[in-house]
Image (tube, rainbow over all chains, first blue to last red; front, side, top):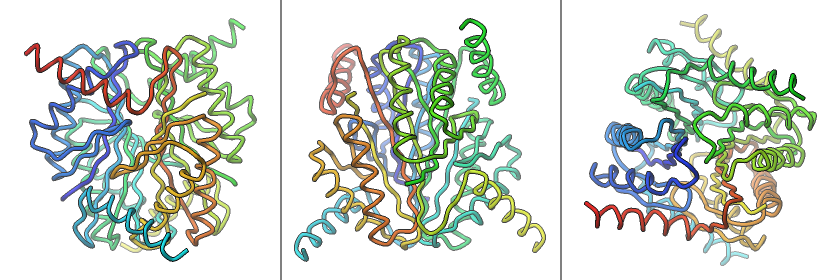
Length: 105
Length: 105
Length: 105
Length: 105
């Protein structure tokens, strides 16, 4: 099952700055061979369900091992069986709708 | 790795009412032997990471098989290594803090 | 505009236990006269959009004033114009679908 | 109060494709003069709390007016009082931590 995921990992009990841990998580996702795109409030990931969630588990393990006693994570996950759709497709689809709306107005 | 999860599954392309699909998902979680608690905007789940995410995958599969072409799901997931904590512990902890604050004010 | 919201406020930079801050947030929501229901990974809230989001703003202000330098919050929000629906209605709807599915199987 | 928000609006009861509605939402945010950045699973927004949540309310109103009977939205919201931080700062911070980790390994 192919999924598009938005992942936001928040280590707790390690002070106010958490970018060090987010960077570790980026490494884990990259090592897992997953297609990712970092944004200002999370990371988009595209891949097979089992591979994506094995990598997310590994993110928690690595961040705990680096000293974070607690983690709270928010995930959005999309699946569809009507057609294939990549992260790039989703962005293009919105751009086309905006362009079309401007032409018709 | 033990997790506490909040799961909210939203089938798309099946009309405005989705409770039928949420009910299917409850059955899947129950059959998986997971501890769950339904609330008005999702379901709390407590269990082993691999078992919880195998069940969430099964929720998507069952809902797609029942006719939903697309699903978008929101998940919150908490892990901690400093101590064990159940869903009931979390609720009790907030209740105790509120009681203590009222006593001291 | 009436909304049903699921709110999960996570103070950062205050150590691993955050129930004291969640308790403050419960007080803020209560004082705002909103209908709430606490669960193990957030709080369901029912009310007018402007009142709910004024209260959520107040939660952040109170938690910052209590010493948390940073807060990350996850919110789910539902609106519908086809019919009125309360938090209790949503729970009942799922329960009915499960009961009906068991009868027909 | 300045906020960084991640917004994901999901219209329900309008079929499987929702990019038309996401495009409307982009227009609303742009008209509100907010700084935004679209990604594959939502939109990052930076601005004043009251302005951001007035715009999000307007997104729901516009999407309902366009025919969607029901909407479920997921929002992440960050505030901090220890220092100012933009969406660009957050991305740079992770990039710096990754570069530093590679140098030291």
